[in-house]
Length: 367
Image 1 (spheres, rainbow, N blue to C red):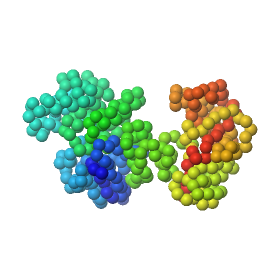
Image 2: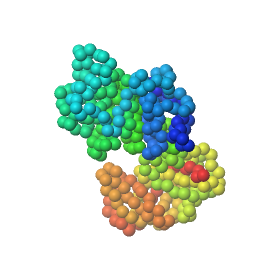
Image 3: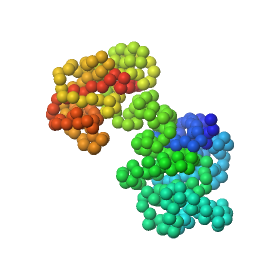
Image 4: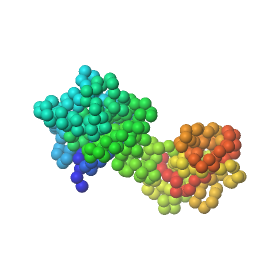
């Protein structure tokens, strides 16, 4: 397979702090790859090393098979889009896009042709003469990308470029960015702390914590088959119960919670043993809700966990609406509200039964 970007055992230290700790990744040609993690996890430091603004203490970085560790930023065929875009306010749109070509000494006719072509491709064909202040937030995003793409980079680096946009525009731009990447066919490396951005746009995602990668996988695998407790809790929403493993049979784990509830799930991190301290994670959309029927806590049909509680509140948000149920141990459990209206008429204080298949609970040991 052809790789546009390879990082091998890359490490970066700042004094006694290891910001990036022995990370490796390979990004196939033409991919949309995201690095997802909380603030301070090391993702921006890694991107700065790829761009050439920082030098790794150990490891290698290769772009299209060639080492770039000792190359200055202006000698690497990578371009970067920042959160605040850094468009030149004293130049119009066409001049902004043409700036890099002029610095390379391109002919005027070539500059005019390439600027017109890239504006056509980002859907702003008649915008070359506009001033930057005349553009909307989404248009500025596309001009920032066009300014990079006119130089035909091997890799485009995007450092949380949607962070300054309002929610509605951010949702729209997620789709726009994905479509632009597919149209140009250029490898995009996207840095974000927003798991929705990473899941929607990416072919593969690396989840980062404390300078290391927890898991590199497809968005679907990260969501449905997390390999660590951090990934299970960070990617998407989850309910979490803590307890002790009472029995482990292959991949199936039976856990007794601190409140005496007995839950069954599947191990997400290899073999587990009786007596292990563990957490089990369950997605809100995996939980079915019905009016309380007196079922025993933790009991249910074979292969199903069942708990009872009382409605604490209803959170209406259209298709993403949730119901909050307070269980016997005073824990709030979040369940998705189906569009079928099966929980219509629930009021705070109503008794409810919650159920979910054993296989939808992922168990991880707790150190």
